[in-house]
Image 1 (cartoon, rainbow, N blue to C red):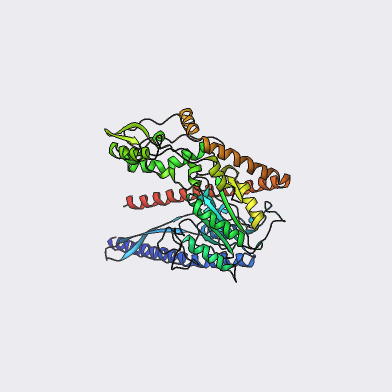
Image 2: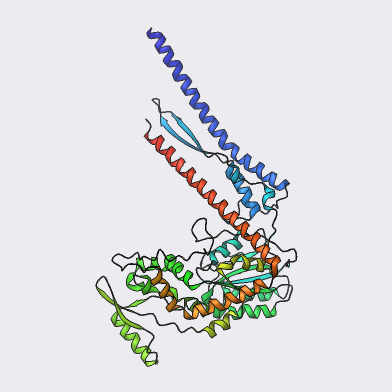
Length: 495
């Protein structure tokens, strides 16, 4: 009887060991098959007519439609295996359990033909081989979305892209701008160097045939003059376009405060205040266009510094440039030290009239279609960035929530009506500028007729489809992450 039990136990151990080895072997083979599946998927895409340069391994996270489809194929066949080992009595490590997470979902891999039709593109649009686009980025107007869009189309459109972080201030540089990229890196070339290279391109074979350059709008004064000079020298076959976007003050102020100013107040309230009303600058967009980053300026001064500054301003006959109402933060008294805005409508208008397109954030789709008609751009279906998931860039409902300060002991946030009144009182020039140029842009869109209106409708549908698709992918990724975490917890708790 004892012999039978020992024989049965030995057989069971041998069977368990064999099963474990087979599971370990199958896991290794499953990992080895993943590259083969990727190569086969890519080969199918090439046979279907997808250009070879649309690689799923582009440097950008926001790929053109065809390449994004390839990447979704790769993810759809991905299988995640979590393997943990346990030392046996003879100190040999064997796989204890293999958990497979991730099931094929057809929504992640739409047919390649689904994205081939683009009814929003005009058949009569210009298809230029050479153009230079200069985009002056006002913070929180949709500029990040535009930057990511052009970065994603870099290979598909064969366009060179220089973001605001790729170009340093100044004129001289020992580094050629060609191929130099880096977010505010000291190794990058300067804006002046790039403009000199573009001028030299006019004399012979150009290095930068198609180009998108993003500049901070606070550099408008120094940069727009150079852009207009380059435009006057460029032939009609290689035009230069200057673009910018404006936004409704009631939308840009809360967005700017929640994205930038709240963080500054949380870090150093003695410099940036502790409430929305204390930070609130006058006519922010007008000042940015005129070269002043007023939204990032320090707000508060100590009494000593305020007195010194007042003496200087009094000597310059600028008596009303500082609000002398004191504030107390943590028991210490401060004075609001930001000078009152000196930007005028006429000054901002002088700069804005030099742009080829002055669009608005709420009409981003029309803005991109007009740009496509001028240049021939095709891959313009975008994904909104820095917005709530599943929402468009400028939602219809005005949202003044989230203005609650992050500083401990700060006064409560203003309610919707109070916040709206505060913004209205401080944006008289901004509102006049926005209303005027929104009206101009709407008239420009209306003049393009019903055909353009239909194209806008088709384009909006495609953008919404992409938003929904990205939202579904995010939800699926979140579910897979939760399943992976739960599996790991089960493995840890099991004996």
